Length: 234
Image: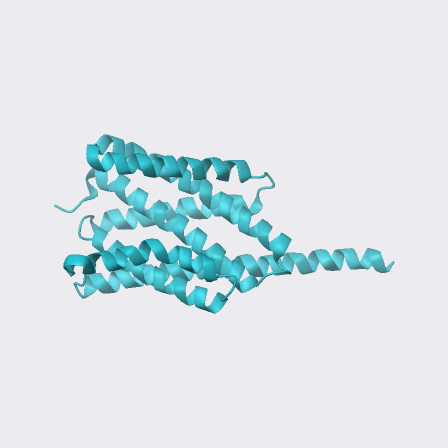
């Protein structure tokens, strides 16, 4: 009788814990997006841009933008609070970088890119959270495709083909959409497997970072796609 009553209670506790974890993870990811948007808006309002920097100073925020995610991920399980602060700092740096795009693309284009990326992100995240299908193979293939895509994009920097860049942007949207679903499912499974052995806050920060990167990259790719359809500033 006791075993019969204990099983439902454990299931309920697991579901409550999982819901709390997912809410925290997506909440922090959403907060990072808001911080980025507010930073970009503030810099545009006061006509501040990192492009105003000269010499090596221009590369400082760009270097931080590339390196900081690795630092945050490394500290997330050891120092969750430090990692959370790092996530917010990274969101501000990303907002500063995005503010440069406002000098190239119109407000309508940036708004369309944001809405499109949000729609794709929410749809794929919901699928990753609810599907019972194992997305590990999909995530592995998407990760491999991303590496190949990055190499091809670097090559295209020398070729300067707009058609190739346009095709790559569409491919990148598919890749990051798949990664969004996979990252969501992966973090859910990590909580169910290790939630009682590691810091839940640290795991949530790590998940928020991964999903935030997926969203930002979706936004940047949609921005390029819409920009190629005449959404650039003259």
